[in-house]
Length: 67
Length: 337
Ligand SMILES: [Zn+2]
Image 1 (tube, helix red, strand yellow):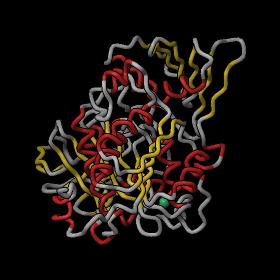
Image 2: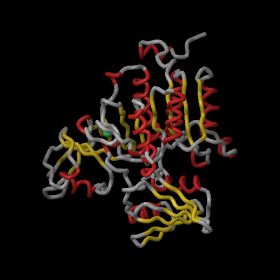
Image 3: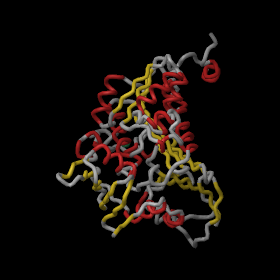
Image 4: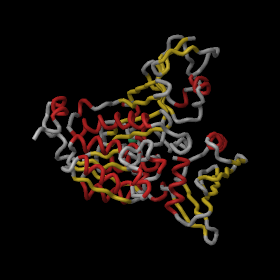
């Protein structure tokens, strides 16, 4: 399945993945992130019930603390 | 005399838009240095910069205002910054404050200096939440910016218009990703400061309609960029910017507390309530950079900067071999952000 993550094409091998699955694949499951899927911000408690589909456009913003 | 601002004026179509403006920059590290230089070169009338630290050799790779001499002499960052900034632009009124940027210090600086904007050059979330509360209280715009590794993030908070940092983050993130645990490359600083600096110029020039409303983030190593419109995240009941704000980070119980443990040559650092640390994650991060770490899941012990530290799951840390509270607090924020 091909989706776009932060402007880059990604080929996802998982079967029927949720956004939470994708975050785990990126090792972001315990990080502080804000996710937008196809222009809509996905609330935290919906990440594991929102399934990805071919052509989805995802924006993942990770909060960091340095400076 | 030729006009030093001519190229900027050509772009802005305005003469000296920043001359009567003042910015308060919190932190004179990597971001603070870059932001201060940008504003002073642009002709900002006043820049106030506060920092509690002194220049160290590990700063020179990315903190653009400092020299080997500053590191050798351990000059306070705010002092060294002022010196360099003044030599860049002698017309700027630069005020250097060597102090810990707590709620009281920042509030009195805001009242005394009357800045038009607050700029985030800090390296930890706790101070950012203090800035966030003060910005709401004094109705001042502020620009969040943070970076680590090859990543960075930024957004503009305008009281009464945009969501604030507390709207975006209900609790302090507790991941321990800081420049001291995962490192940083200078371009990540420059990019973040560029995002912050451009918005600061727009705010100071009064170009409200041109201010970016998105939260932006990037990773220069992976070549990714993302931008999310966050206006829908503004919360009516936000404790910082909602209808009945309580400014939680200005009150004492939300602050990192320190105590010297009597007769033990140990300082205890206790974070604001509600942080839960993933000790295993932090342990593997510290291991990767060559620190000898032991953890049993309930506590983590390691030797960092020559001091033995013990971290508990609730974020409490014991720093052994010191009675110096500010050293212990610095070590704490180096590790946990
Ligand atoms: Zn808010």
